[in-house]
Length: 327
View 1 (cartoon, rainbow, N blue to C red):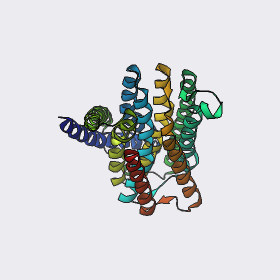
View 2: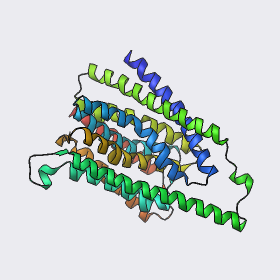
View 3: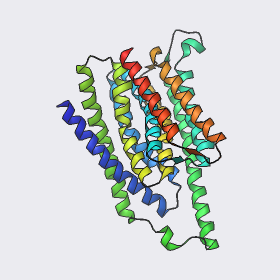
View 4: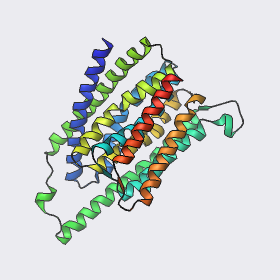
């Protein structure tokens, strides 16, 4: 039964991701909003809903190990597995805005988790958890990030108006693939499919994992985290096949930022979340990989990540997962 639930969840996530990318891209084209903005808001919020649902449920039940493992496992899967797999499917050219703004914000989110969750080291006190005050700080960071995203949307609309005035944009080029009502329906149905599929994936995978005798921390890191990120993987692959790279990076970076500033922020308001010291290795890897990608793109003239980087990221993720299961 757990395996059947898992398969149903995967099917719902795949179909939901397809609808969400179609609808989101159409809305972006209609209003000339940069696709990285759509990826960082509609797609990222939608595909982050499973993580939020799991964390709220875990916090209400007092299972904070699962909540923290879920977020850290999800972010590691996003930055390593999803980016790596998409790079293997097709070389990824990353926008200047993503390199100069979104990647640094993603790196800040990873660093903030490490600092706020390790008071035992930084403040020399016997705590290593996220409190309500940390949750409020995270939500403040979220507000700043959303202001930046709103500014990007406004800049995109200004550029579009200038192009129309100069006669550089044709009606045929600007025509969206779907009517507005249809696009909204696609987005709504896609979000429903992603959230429902993510829940089924988590339920099925957790049932399988528990039958194998794994701890809550390992279940969160290895099973639930990647399971709740499966919608991001499907949405990113669907976008990559359409050569919509802005959507891919916006989705991945936006999801990692929202997982920390939104999901962990809300969860910490409900109940303090201990950072299991064994999970510090995941925090360090998240920081290192994000910094590596940012540094690689800064010094690469064409802002492109190819199959070599993709293979490295996927291999790194597989190596860590194997280590976690054997440790």
